[in-house]
Amino acid sequence: MTDLSQKDAVLTKTKLNNISSMARAQETNMATTPLSVLVKANAPIVYGIVQPGSEVPKGIPFVQSRDVGGEVDIHALQRTSPEIAARYDRSQIELGDILFSLRGNIGQSSIAPPDLEGANIARGVARIRIGDNFTPEFVRYVLQGPVLQRLIARNANGSTFRELSIEELRKLPIPNVSLPEQCRIAEILRTWDEALEKLTTLRATKAQRLGSLRGTLLFGNLRLNGQRHHWTPTRLAAVTHELTERNGAKGLGRDYVMGVTKAQGVVPMREQTIAGDISRYKRLPPRAFAYNPMRINVGSIAMNHRDEEVLVSPDYVVFACNADGLDPGYLDHLRKTSWWAHYINSGGSGSVRQRTYYADLAALKLPLPDLDEQKALADVLDTARDDLEATEREIDAVTRQKRGLMQKLLTGEWRVEME
Image (cartoon, rainbow, N blue to C red; front, top):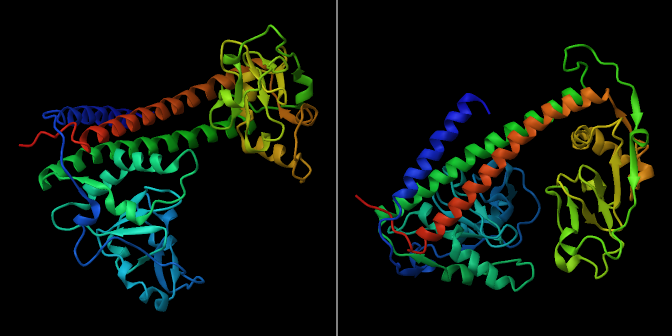
């Protein structure tokens, strides 16, 4: 993290703590009013164009559910003919309208900027035009809050929730608070959003830096000492070995059964997906690798970063690095490059692989320096990776704080301190 970003992070945390402390003065429940009552009398809550037809390059732009959730980019919107848009003039957009997704990314919303005036919306989007006694920003935060989440959970009933009806949306309860308190609540929550935006930008910068470092250090022309490298390509088979040991009848328990995902690596497997008999499950030692041969093409391969041995599915491929030839940390970074992904997806021959077993993977030729330099490279990359992960943890923490604050402020459990 740069000095500027460190200072920015400290100031942001201080501001969050100060604002949070102002929201605890009163604890009382607040009355609510259905959303449909709060909109302007001449602009009820409606959805938009049902059949927009073919794309019309110079036609009327319309907002779809996939377009909402932040700032709406008018240049990225599809367009329909003026004739079709005219039949749906009831759902035409004005500045400040809330555009709410009813399907797809349900619950996401945006506030219409000036350049969206005169545009329209699709069937999966609701237009909400708030009246004079409420502010769009406050209502939008309520629509992101706990009441809507409970409604979605209630309607899901254990299955994928595909759409929120406009009737349900119209009935959503909005807290009855004064305009000054609405503005204060919106200001508090906006501070959290600004903090998340800064952290998200910082995360993207660090991810880009890590990717660039991997490309430079693992495939570049210079070594860490500044000299030019001359690395001989080495087959993975020469520096790794497959592991096939099974758990056995009296081996590790069900708590040790893990799955492998691209996003999280080696993680506990859900109980309902574990077989009744785990004696055939394979043992995965620390710093060894496991992958699903059917899913390695989407990145489902990971190193066991735990300090203990775990179990993985008997269908997985498990292998370890030879102590005298390949550093696991070096390989762990190498497998996260585009070079690795290209080999896995094409097998080096241009054809798409359906399954990749150990013999297939072992044919891969690695850019392999000597073991000491492998470890030195891995240390440099580990530092950049740990820095990125620290920012990701901070984003998770701030997201949880905002969610908790919304629960307090938007249900009346906490009331903000007003001068």
